[in-house]
Length: 370
Ligand SMILES: Nc1ncnc2c1ncn2[C@@H]1O[C@H](COP(=O)(O)OP(=O)(O)O)[C@@H](O)[C@H]1O
Ligand SMILES: [Mg+2]
Image 1 (tube, rainbow, N blue to C red):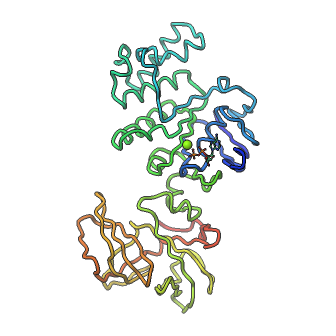
Image 2: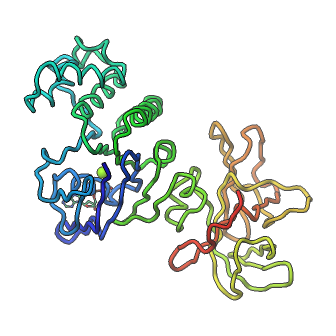
């Protein structure tokens, strides 16, 4: 069943939590709603579930308007941060509970509980109490309890936020695997861009009550629609350099950025830059290379190492360029750098992003090669 949200607005007094928010989740799709704390994610979920009334807008499930339906009649399953199983019931009864509440015949309950429990591999815990399970096992039981009713839509609001890093990575995989098996239409909420990238069919990146970009994880990462998305998705974050395009010759555009002069090879750029304009150049730390004296198809910049930090899989090096700018480079963890060393770095043409400084919107279209 598809889930469609049309022009949803929610005001809490003078706070505009949602501002004409629209989104469509296709039938069977795993959609991730990604955004920073306070941007309105939980408000979206609560409106869909019927726990708050939207100020304006329509919510449709399988093409049917549900605005007027009570939460229990919307056929939605929800999982939050706190999975809260019933402590006095054993695992079987915990999973069966939503069916018993609906007065479903005992034999049918047995079948349904068994089916979902087989998928989640939790049948072996049927006779145990929640306190006799590990954190990950309890979460699987909670997923079973949410899904046993075979709801039309599955909403998850930051379900992994309370877990340690290792269990979080494991549960990411478990939830995704389960959703691929049962293909239930899912809206998964998170502020964690790694969760979004690793789990989603499509990601809706949200800020200030609005969708900033909707696309596959690859699209959102490789072709960010604006500086907000570029900054929010990807770790370590993209570097941004504000540039004035000040001169040109046949082969190069010269851009100045706080006392740095950079040459951009004009014929290899993915867009035409208007002269005497301003532009923001974005480049991801892992796309920047250390150069010796070789020819290079991109921007070459000289700088001085100002900081170096080992982050496990890579080393993050900060390079001071010009008077007060600095850029971060993610490089081989085994390379060592002495603070103060002079270096030359290169930004390959096909890895550079251009943004308009006033709006922050992406300037080039999709004609980049990767
Ligand atoms: N019941 C409420 N009363 C007043 N303001 C609220 C209420 N719930 C949320 N808000 C405000 O609405 C905005 C969006 O909140 P929320 O949807 O919880 O964001 P998120 O889940 O993305 O962190 C925030 O500014 C928050 O303070
Ligand atoms: Mg929230």
